[in-house]
Length: 79
Image (cartoon, rainbow, N blue to C red; front, side):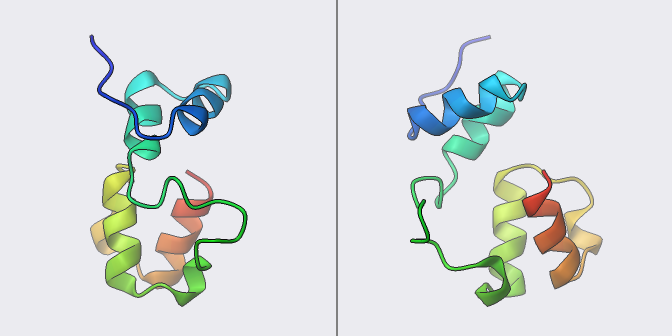
């Protein structure tokens, strides 16, 4: 399996080092907010439920359609 182009190579490598699969690492590193580090991205509590859902979709969190806002935040932080 070929790895798709990765936008954030450093994040991809860090995720691989943590044991994430190549596919999941690439998906997370290519998500729209992957380059926002060091407090530049607003905290999840300030995101709308739709924004949280889209981020959960980007990183392939299962069961996201049935989650409320707090559950989405928990799932994103613990994915």
